[in-house]
Amino acid sequence: MDNYHWIEQGVFDHLQTEKIFTDQVLDKFKACYKKKFETALKKVEHLVKNELDKGNVYFVLIAVSAYETFLEHDIPKDRSILLTDDCINKPLRSTLIDGTKKLLDQAENPFQTLVQVSKERENNYFGSSFEFERPVDNQFGYILHIKKCLFHETLKALNRQELQHLLCKMDLGWINGIDPDKHDTQFVRPVTFATGDTCQMWFIKTEHL
Image (cartoon, rainbow, N blue to C red; front, side, top):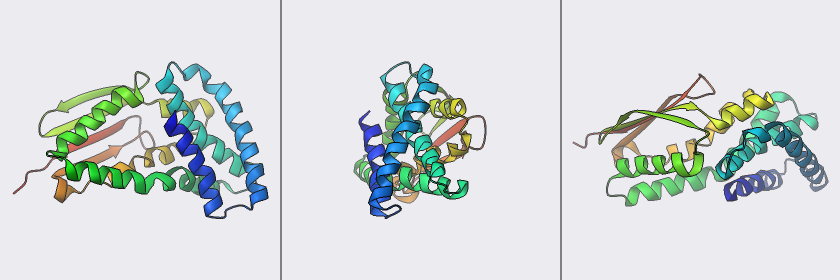
């Protein structure tokens, strides 16, 4: 839930820093956002089975509520999507990139470290409402198939699938922290729920010559 509050505050901070609205309009935006959030939450409460679910569902609700509030302020759909993307992803991007770089730079085996972090997040961040398959898991590669995604299920329940790619872009922070040459590790995400009916993440150990 700490991540949820951090991301939510980042939305308002971004709008203020970038002067998207005047202070008066921003206050109205926050009030409208809160109402949108509460309305959306009632529609998806049945998806929340535990504390991990709550944080992940709330993350989706931040994006949906911000987007719908932009629309409520008569901002065209395409512009509203771009603004939502900026609010959700820009505030955290540099922090995620820098954190990943630091972690892998200090790791004795960056590939194994990255895989271990992924496995820990599968259990401790995503949880049982996501369904994972691991067709490859050895010292050379780790291929993760996400067969069920709570983010995707929440968007479907709210009929806001057009925002799926924004949520998937959050991962670009840590993905862009990987230096294939320096860390002897490549990462490929050939498909996500934004482009298909599954999400695949391929972690590949490259040979150091």
